[in-house]
Length: 159
Image (cartoon, rainbow, N blue to C red; front, side):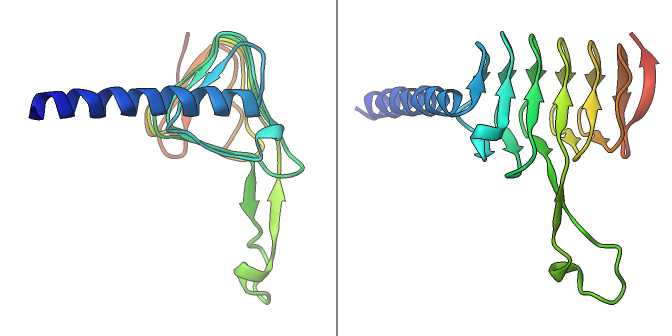
């Protein structure tokens, strides 16, 4: 009996993830790409996913006035955070909490792989054919056909 309950629970959880994945994929501008059911999505109308690309569980947080563009044939691993917004912080007089937010587009070009737990910061372009290593924090553009890693991310080698 316990085995049957476990099997039913597994089937239900799988069904739920598939339904959420289909719902999320329909909410964004998808050209044949998919978003995993464990992904947090904000402002889906500002997210574009190319053909044959897949976003696993993580965060796609686009601002109201900025976009996340993911090209064709991209692999975005689990727990990746892609966020187009950031807090202002430069004034020493005004408390940071009251300085407001800024937004810049994030573009991930075709044939890129973003590793587990990486963070792609606002305004970054990951150029065609590049790999972002697990846990990297990408604060600057990634040149074409390179592998970057670390905090902050730096070029490790050319592909």
